[in-house]
Length: 140
Image (tube, rainbow, N blue to C red; front, top):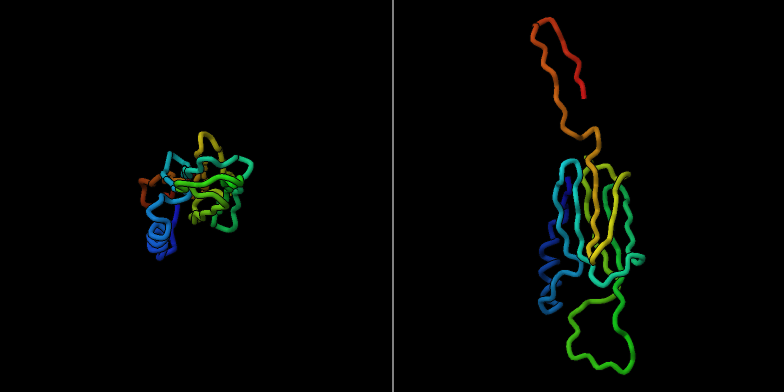
């Protein structure tokens, strides 16, 4: 399962929005469970796939991406709401996930990460013996 351990995250998010004049989050994320996988979707419009960097250390997945800005001389900006530069986001992964088998796909400005549940963490049936003297081994 995905875990969130930073109690100040919402406060930081609110502060960031106030400082950016109400702009949306730089790397909005959705996460859900799909069968035996957790799926994480990150919006990265305008980012080239080769600028995306994924790194897992212990149970922390870090996503970094770079969106170049329009830095040509001679341009006079009237409105500049599209953030540019290097952005990063960390996702804290539970111990029940298989971080060795994470897959990533980037299409139409959305980075999709699939994180499988570890085999030892999947639900399994346990047979119950019906005789008082009989013990049934646990089968997975």
